[in-house]
Length: 158
Image (cartoon, rainbow, N blue to C red):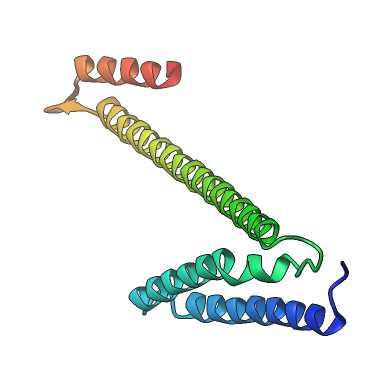
């Protein structure tokens, strides 16, 4: 059964309005993120709850047209199948989002480790160079200078 044109227009206008509203709210939240983090989290939570409620209750009712020649149980089954599908899609989106966040955190941790290693190498190099210029009184301190040479060799090997 093909839905009536007015129903289709109303359906798509609600979807477009909802997407536009979410876009405006996200743009507002990003603009004020640094100063109003609590408001952003509250708006994000409310949007998430509202979207979840919309997907579970009215959206399946709108997606499944009235079937004139079918029993009411058939429509109820179809509506529940649409709900189940949307819940599965939401679970998949959440899983992909969690994966992206985990990968990003892993990348940041890796960069932090590299920066720490670079800092340690720089510190070791600076100490080795200081050892090369070591003096004891008026004479060069040969033992410390040899230690500096070995330290530079170890840095080169690493």
